[in-house]
Amino acid sequence: MNTQEKDVWAVGFATKENTGEMAEKTNKKLINVFVPTTPNPTSGFLLMFPIEDVIYLNMTFEEASKFIVSAGTSTKQS
Image (tube, rainbow, N blue to C red; front, top):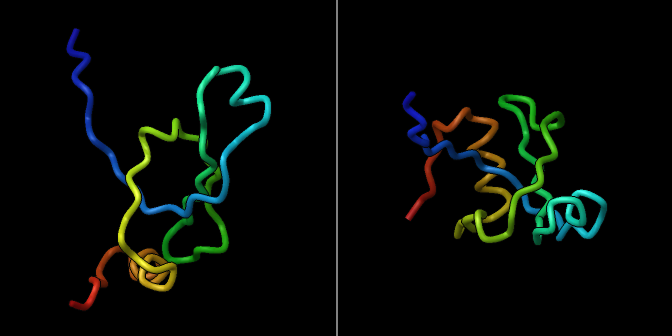
């Protein structure tokens, strides 16, 4: 059986550290991340990730929102 891991990435918005039951039950420092859907960012998923697994981007809220709404076709202007 092949159990090779695949890297999967998504743009989301880290909202706050999770100090609730999920963090207690997993015994990990978790961060809440809202991952909006494309092209309608008013719906999406609230996910909890171990803080050490989150990669923060050098992107403004507006740039990230544009990237999501455009289904990934917009790019950051240099």
